Length: 87
Figure 1 (spheres, rainbow, N blue to C red):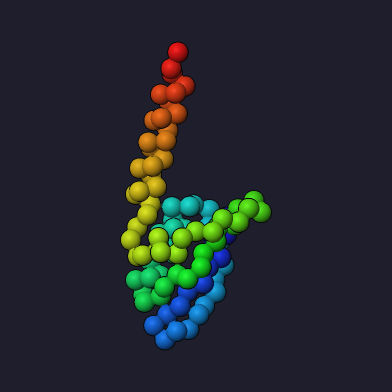
Figure 2 (figure 1 turned 90 degrees about the vertical axis):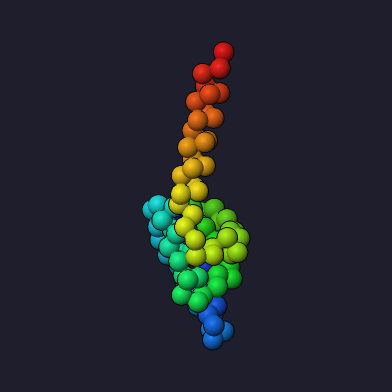
């Protein structure tokens, strides 16, 4: 998957990036860490299998997302198991 995004720094310089990732949780955390260095994400898209998904730039605030994503995944798997085991 590819993340295409733009940042603006405290000197109002805009930079454009394209980063390849194989792990979604790692990708979210890596992009989010850029904000800790004084950058603000102004636009971000996830490109996967020729599908483009715009993501909310304000979600990338320097905090880790991987624990939240893993928690959601666990809940999702649990719900799937419950629905499969229902008569």
